[in-house]
Length: 449
Image 1 (cartoon, rainbow, N blue to C red):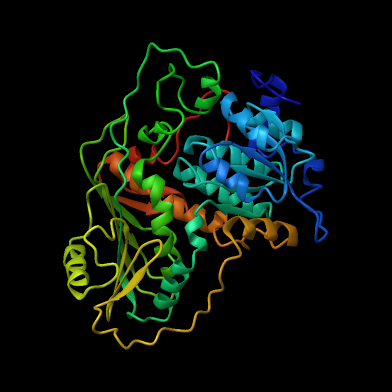
Image 2 (image 1 turned 45 degrees about the vertical axis):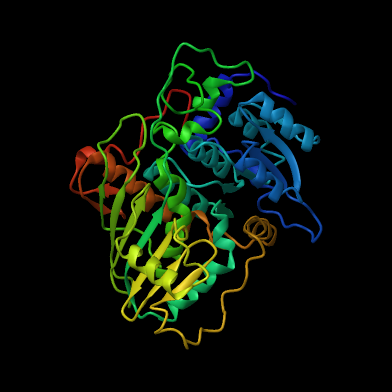
């Protein structure tokens, strides 16, 4: 069945609200989740969001059955339907999930950030395995909720941090874990992203192919604004979280993985004056992480826009002077610097180097022991089929939920204008009742988490 301009029915809303409270759950929805798959049997997958990054996610799981597609843009939906003609099409994911609940096994969420949590939460509560793009959620509390639901229902999840599957990250993790540079107490992470300058416009009607009300979802109701869809939504706090939200889960991922980080105890952000509409360029966020077993406390500093760690200037100059293949002045525009007791590691998505070069000239690396990934999406699919459980994937919602919480606490700190102390167990900022209000947000009527 194809849904074009349908608004969610009262019956659907009541049922969805009931799911949000954990009541009214239809037992039949669990039947496919608890089953086992024959070797050549395929999953039935639904997609929420169909173009751009979402299109690549769908393509990555297209070896399975794509049975339902949802997009608020009818042009995008038609393009996806042409590629997957067997799939039924919908405009409202709540309608799709209700009508397809008995058929689908798993859901891929590739929407703007503000839709991630409500779409993923409803899918999880219906017993569906979920692959969701990063950042996992739009608020800190949403990340905790998704992680808890996935764990409680033992569902297979994966965050769209595809670079996690690359071999370069694995080799860096091995170097850190084997203490090639000694114990690490300091990490710097920087990305040259800029999503500042967003301005709402008014007076122009939404194009006929876009259901603007559904696009807004749980966000505050406002008139259509040009260019927000399909990509400039990242320039607005209502829908995105700036460079930190867009790239934090990619680049801070390596530090969280290698150093076994989860929840910071304090967060302090410095940057330009806060624009209530749009993220700003040039944030510096300092996270303090406690000791973990025999691992020492870690200070992790994030930089975006034109900001970079001071040490990077001298490091790049030394690499250039030595003729290093990655010593170009244009190299390392984004990356990580792990500072250990006996040296440092400079890395990015594809490369890494031990520093100082002369000290590690004859260094014997540990034999690789972290297996190559079978593919970030394939990990998720195989874990579902084998019944491997909630924590079987490398970027499951327990791991990536904590990562997303840390990333978004940087946004909270920036908006609050102060250093914050974080009680992760109780999801509470202990020194700022005002900033606590930014840990979550109010949903528009008709939308639930």
